[in-house]
Structures are given as structure tokens and as C-alpha cells.
Length: 333
Image 1 (tube, rainbow, N blue to C red):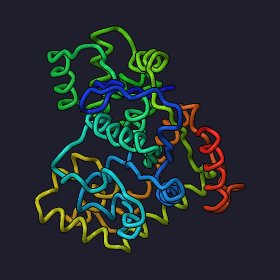
Image 2 (tube, helix red, strand yellow):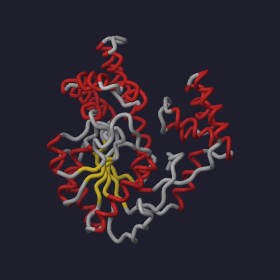
Image 3 (cartoon, rainbow, N blue to C red):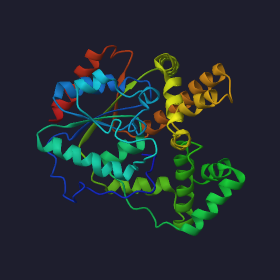
Image 4 (cartoon, rainbow, N blue to C red):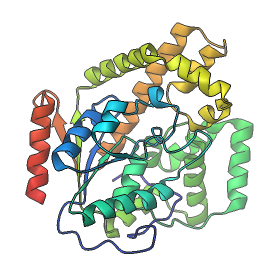
């Protein structure tokens, strides 16, 4: 697998340090894949069929007050099946992948002890992998190297650092955003400290790591159809009141947090709200950035051979998809 979780530690233990028991049944059923692919609906159908609960693995849906722009489950969907980690943070808070691993694994453990698998739904690949495979200690941090890299980004822009990462470790650069300063800096820091590529370190970790017993599914759409779904989804968000949501967040003092979180849609439409860009241009930019993000998500999940794909052209309805998933899950139980 290609992607690496660079700077958080995790172990095969819950928040109290207690080991997971040996798995005799599937512990996690995950619905993953790119934005706009129908993960929420399928996840709810699976959780309902298994009489279990959903753990969100969409890091933007962790935030309250950002329901429209993050495509969070509706009130009716939340009422239908219990969800964990939806709207449990304010925009000025953070939850690292390492923190998420500890908290989410404790939920998995509780559900498993009740004889149920957890259903994990989300497209944040790093968080999905943190939960299923766990995080690990990379080489020690070097604050001196980090400060030099951050200063270089401040002076010359992140593009300079990202270009260096592409030359050193193209495999890792492919699965992170070219605007992700934190992970770009960490990957370069690792290389400077250890002389090894982040992607190689993670591959070795994967070979020895005891992962949770999980089955992962994604709905596979032809690229153009997926992009059309994304464009429609953006239009629907705007019809639902995304501009009003952004205006409220700005009024509540979260403008800087919106920019820090790099949440799709908010940055682009905030520019319109502030009068810095025309409405039509902001909408087109939001659609373009969302399509690019979906492409990165596809790259990430294609790098994991464990993901099973449901072809949208043959699994045309929710009923067919659910039937296929339940067949796999029941066979594993």
C-alpha cells in the first residue's frame, strides 16, 4: 500500500491500554471511497441490517455547524442509526488521526464485545487506516529541521517543498494534497532524519502490523459519472444554504479555522462572501477542487488491495449493493 500515516503513534489497544481479543468474527465493515459516491446511504443500510452502529471516518464531519458543506448525515439519518464522531467538535478544535484511532477503537471494542461489528463510513483515508491498521512511531522529530522547512515554506511557498517531496518520494506525494504543509514537512523531515522515504516506512509497518479484522467496500463509478455526481452535490449544498452556513461561521469567529481546516467548499465560497471572488467563479472553483480531492481519494483507496469494489453499472441499486455486502459479511462471520 502506498499511503503512510506519518506522525502519530497507535497500538493494538483501546484508550485504557487493554488489548483487543483475538478476532473470531469480522470486527469492522467499512464503506470507503471518494466524496459523492453514496457512502452514507450504503453505510446506514448495512448498519441497519446488522443492528449495529456507525463510526464516521470523515474528518470534516467531526465539526458542528458545518453540516451542509461537509455533507454530514441528515437528522433523519442520524435518528435511524446511531453515529459516532459526527458533529462532536467545534471548528477551532482538532482531532488527530492518532486521537481518532484510540477513541474509535474503543467504540469498535465495545460493539465487538456486544457481538456486533462496527460499520465505519468515510473517505478520509488516513483516518480509516488509523482505525483499521493503527498508527506507529516514525523516526524521532527534529525540531531544527522542521523549523528550517517551515521557514522555507513561509519564504518560498509550499510548492517548493512539495516539489522536493515529489522528487524524493513520489508515491507519498501522490496521496496527499499539494497544499498539505504539515504532512509535506513531516515526510521531508523523516527523509532528512532517517534517509528513508515515508512510503517505504509505512509499507514495512503494514507487513508486521496486526490490523483489525475488517472488510472494506467502495462503490465504483466511471470517472465522468462520479464527477457529474460531485457537480450535482455542490449545487445541492448551495441550494440547501451553504452560503448562510458560511456567513454564520464567519459571524461566530471561525473564518481562520475554516481556512486552517482546508475544508472543501468553505474556502472557495468564503471568498465570495468576503467579496473577493464572483459567485459563479467560486462555484466552479469549488467543483474543480472537489473533483481533484476525489481523484486523490481514488488514488489512496486504490492503493489498498483489501478494498472490494461494487461496480455501479452492475450493482445499480441499494438493494443489490446491500445484498452483496451482506453475503461477504455473513460468510466472514
